[in-house]
Image (cartoon, rainbow, N blue to C red; front, top):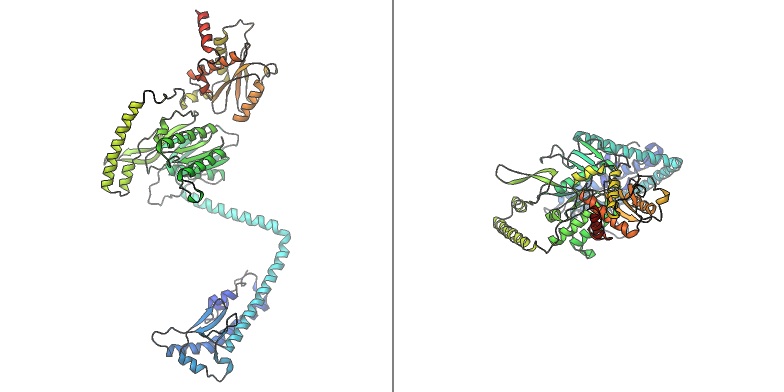
Length: 594
């Protein structure tokens, strides 16, 4: 479309806003498609301009000459509501001089608004009013002609609408990608390696990632970080150490990777996530009748409902909206639940009691912290780097001092902190004897699980045979039956699939082991594969003496695997010390051995 300027661009006394209000159709189509209508508007605009110069400018000049010191200046006013040009602020001397004009067309009169009411404080001439109406009518005709041309163009393009939309969409996407690449290349971002959808074992690895909202020209010093995420990470660290920044940065890396875009890191390997969730601090919602803590619980409920083993979840400061002990308990339970779902992500918290809770976590969960260092002034300062380990220092009082809190408040806070710490330590010593159960020693470390993750299922099968021999006693070779091994995507033998008591052990793709007993190994294995995935290996032994003996063998196997450090999903079942008569059986077996 050729540039078709407004009439005000070539008429000096033609208000631009007035021209824009009437000539918005200009530039919609080529001028040569509606030449007559456009020429008529130009002629009407020129005629109106000449009438303003001949009739109204002399009045304006005379009014300025006779204007009193504090009186308003006379001006040609554009009335948008009435779409008109009138004089306002005309002096009485100018009115009396031009009101007695011999020519009726140039005599000053009061105009009428769109409702027909006379405006006593506005002035014009009949000649200007006639030229004004001619100009407005020409603009309406030109607008109708342009609309007709656009309708004709739309009808002619109707068969190609689909192609036009596709081209427009592709053009928009191409422009966005080009802008993204141009900007990110200048910042040193990289193209991520997105894993295959079936790859559930390779960790989420990011090397030297940086917050995307900080570029190299900023005054703030940007510290790159490197992290491998194979499960849930419990992240602790002082205030202002960068925990929330780590969460936001990793979430942006995960999201950009799923979109096929460049990421703010030197190197990046990202699994395919079915959902990416970042839950930050929330406030109350009075309109819904929810406190701040209630909003937290509503949000985390939605997070857990929508998460799966292919989800990336980052949670920041959950549980700080309530009392510390209960907040710690809920935070620990949420961590355990997210880990049980198989999510990968980070749980950042200042509730250090979470680290002492007896949580049953997978071998891929680990503790990490934001690093700190002692400055030359003897103060502890954050390094803004993530590292393995735990941090139980909040640096809250130091942060308050850095923010300018008054010295007397800081001194009292330090006193209260020392008293609280001393009283808390005494209370823990007084109640540690019997008020709380001791922590379980069955939590398996990540290093132990790494050793078992790649073990052959036959090692677990041998453990089942030993547990059966412990309960049933050694058998002759003719009566003894070894363990059956069923690898992933295989099915158990038909002769022992149904109606036969068995004790089984399964190991999923994440290295977790589960021991159980059943009378239908085929159905039970099918159920486990639906729950934990098809990548499950299984071993089982048959039990000739019925269900009670099978339960005793199950308990013996759990206890044996637990003592060896095997990561157990069914570890809790091992607390049934006398389940299925195991104590008496162990005693009889020991007597036989002696």
